[in-house]
Length: 482
Image (cartoon, rainbow, N blue to C red; front, side, top):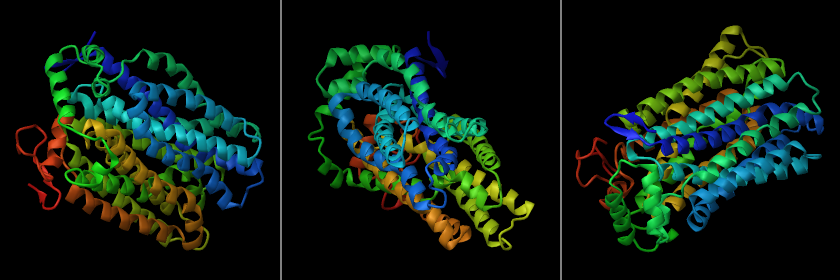
C-alpha cells in the first residue's frame, strides 16, 4: 500500500525507512537530554558535586566519541554499506547504553559514554544518507526533517524520563535514565534487518541487479531503468572518490560550505541549552532539580512545535528561507538571555526575569530546530555526489562536533567565570556571523535530484539551468543570489 503525495504515491517502503530513521533519531535525542537530568544525580553519587570539570568531561565524553565516529562514518558506510552500518548502530546503542547504566565509577561511565558517542557519530552520517538515498526526491526534505522531529521528541522524552525518575532513590534513578535508550534500539533491530540496501551504494559496488530490486521496492512508480541509467552515468563520469577531491575544484566550494555550516550549527550554543538546561535554570534562581528539569522539558515541548512546522514547509519554502529565519530567531532569543542575566540583582532574579530567561531559552531552541537542526541532515546528505557523500557528511558533522566539544567541555566553567550575560552575548555574535555565512553561501536545493545538485558545484556555485527546477534561484558562492 502507498500513500499519495501530490500526483504520485509515496511507497510503503519509504514510510518504513522514515519510521526506522525516526526511531534512531528519538534515541539520539534522548541521549542528548537524559544526561542533563542524570548528571544532577550521578555527580552526587560519585562525589563530584562542585567539580564542574569532571562533570563536563563525563558529559563531553559522548561528544568526543561522536567526533571520531562521524569522521570515520564516511569510510564505514562506503566500505560496508548503508544498511549494515545502520544495523550496527542499533546494536551499539543497546550495548553502550546498558554499560553506562551499570557504571561503577566515573571512569567506567566516561568510557561507556565515549563508545556510545562513537556509535552515535556513525549514525549521524549513516542515517541521513540512508534516508536521502532510499526515498523519492519529492519527500526527501520532509523525511530528513522528520529525523530532527524525532530527535526533539527524544530530547523531550529524556527530560520527562528524568522528571519521572527524579523521585526514586538517587543511587539508581540516573542508571535507569541512562539505560532506557537501549529499549527502542533493541525493538528496532528486526525492522532494520528487513530494509533494502540503497540503490546508489549497490551501483557503486557494481551490483546492478540488486540495485534494480532496491529501486523497485523504494519507489515502485518510478522509471527504474531511467533512474538506474542516471545513477550509473553519474557514477561512471566520476573518478576517484578520494578525500583530496573535496579540497580542490569543483567541490572545494561545497566543502567550505558544509564545514562552515557544521561549525556554526553548534558554536552558536544549542548544546549548552540542552545538556546543561537544568543548570542554566538553576543559575536563574530555580532551586530544585525537579523544577529545573521541568522547565527544560517545557522548553523542548515548545521547540517540537517549531520543528514540526519546519517539516511541513521545508519542501515548499526551500532551504535558505528556513535557515535564515531560524538563525534570526536564535539571535533575538540570545539577546533576551543577555538581558536576563545583565539585569540580575545580586544572586536573585525577579519573576519577570525568570520568564524572560525561559522565553529566551525556548526561543534559542525554537530557532535552532526550525533552521539549523532541521536542515543539517538535509544539507549533509545533499551537498556531494555519491562517491563523496559519506566523506562530505563526515566533514560537516566533524566540524559540528568540534564546536560541540568546545561548548560541552567549557560552557559551565565559562558561565561561572564571566557570567551568563557575556556567555550568551558571545553566542549572539556568533549567530550573527552564522546568518551572514548562510546568506552568502547556502544553495537552494529544494526539488533537485541528488545527481543534479552536484552540477551546482561543478558550475562554479550556480545552477546551470537557473529556474528550470522548482528550487528557485541558485546562489553564486562568491556573488550571492543569482
